[in-house]
Image (cartoon, rainbow, N blue to C red):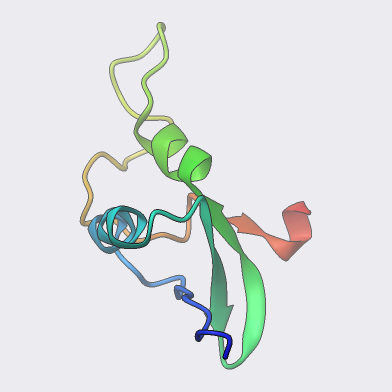
Amino acid sequence: MTPAVKSLTRDCTMSEVETLFKQHDFNAFPVVEDGKVLGIVSKFDFLRAFAFNQASASPHMPGKSDRSDRLRPCMTSNADL
């Protein structure tokens, strides 16, 4: 029997995403709402959200700096694919 697919919503916090990556050791999760796939968030997307560049001491997500922030700015949406 195939196990249920683990998925996220756009309103998951970055802390929740971090926990799910640790618990399930997946490389990516689909982002789903109302049964429709809106996009995907990968470990790379998650790490990039907290990566710093040499020119700035702030994260790449403008105004975002902690794991209580929502997933929306960091996920890859269907429009990006």
